[in-house]
Image (cartoon, rainbow, N blue to C red; front, side, top):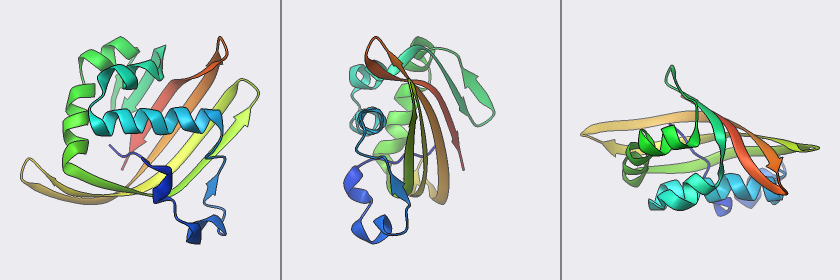
Length: 143
């Protein structure tokens, strides 16, 4: 799994290349808040960013609701992220009415359960504006 955490990881050198677009939009802030919550182990905050009927695709598996994710893989994701370092290589957020698409790529390194890891991962999120608030409706993580 891979995440594009802090906005400060983006760096000025990449802004000229167009690798970071739309990252100060309200939808992007929801994505960053979700990542921050996972990184810091804040289950309540992570859950709050998800639509109730979110679908999450990862490693050939699917979770079909925020509650399913919160009760199954969220804690293991948080433990994994606590052991890893992830640097955002690019992140673009596009708003299309009440829908937003967040696409990012990151470099993840670290040791988890005795295994050294060093890979580039990709993340796509679809957000939907629900009752005036952006919520993550779909996540696809791959590396």
